[in-house]
Length: 112
Image (cartoon, rainbow, N blue to C red; front, top):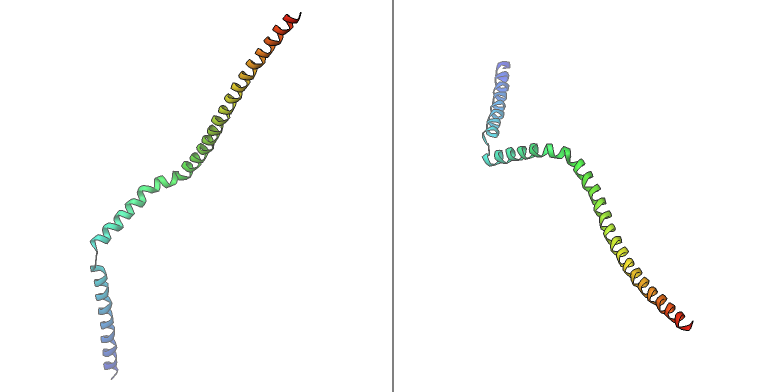
């Protein structure tokens, strides 16, 4: 009777082991070529960009400093335009003032 119990237990264990082996073979045997290709491409893509990713903070910092420089240059251009307009206005004012002084000088000569 003990022998029969051991035999049944052994048969049960062997059946379970066979099921596990079958499941393992089934899982290993189902290789999807497209999935493998996609995984391989993704792996290559990640490794290709890993070198670039390391320098990304430096690139971002450089772009931010260039943005500040660009804003300063835009501000400089607008300030330069404003100064040129002021210079033109001052030149017209000086011309008008010079004409007024000439007229005053002429008037004083006539009065003397």
